[in-house]
Length: 361
Ligand SMILES: [Zn+2]
Ligand SMILES: [Zn+2]
Image (cartoon, rainbow, N blue to C red; front, side):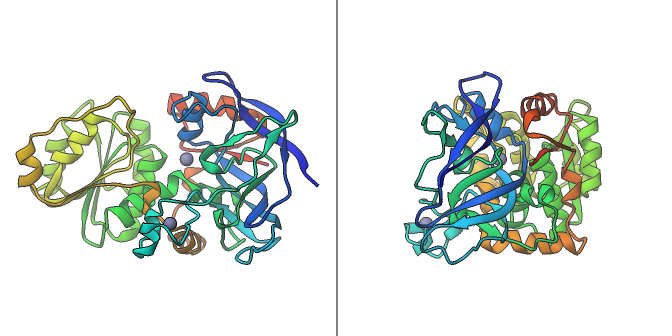
């Protein structure tokens, strides 16, 4: 029997979101219905609401979630009812050209549920990032459910489903930060702070946090930044060079998505170093760099999608580290809120006052 539950819907570009009744079908082959316990509010949800992703309104928002599998469809063997899972938007296909090359973390044909959730009048919903989890229950592809230790609280665990994983992975996977490295992170919101946390976990000796907001720089210190730079008060490139024996950082991570800060990250990097772009640019942005510098400095310019994570490999491992007290995930939860408070949480996010508001269901 299809079920009727509450969900947060963005009906039209720029309009405040509403809580409405949605219809969740029973899981078909390869699908699962998950009882959502917690879901973080991410910038991407706001981008959907603003029409910045596509025009496929109405959207069912929410995608940084953890919960318990309620039921599974035919042929599902990897998860079972009762399993505590983090939802992911990289359910790898196993058969695309990247998967076949042994690089499933770049899978080009990830799975989502085949059936659609709808409004009561039958209007099909577009779930954010193929998840849609500001709702009591959601329908996903079974591969989007990653089983982790249920000892972790859902409001903390769910954050690995998007932004925090993106930042941790930008440092640990894409940037390949390792012990003794020097790192500079531009932008100290949720993703940037996760990149700082990932650098700390990987053993970086110097972690420089750059932002224009002193409050955010304080947060960055809590996650392991060894030095902070307020870019409105001093030149970040010069200061990073000073802090790294005049050389620049081994790995620089841009977590904002602006040409100006990308350029700073480019020049604040040591010879043969790595620049990682994890901030998401707008489609109209361009960047100009002296071509000889691209060649002359060597190294690597990389982009990090979802922290190049492989959910089945990374989520359970990171939850284990969290439960051992070695990974700070609690620090990302600024507040827990109800399903009716998402619109207000968007405003707080725009004002920069929170790392993550998490809806608890
Ligand atoms: Zn694939
Ligand atoms: Zn997200």
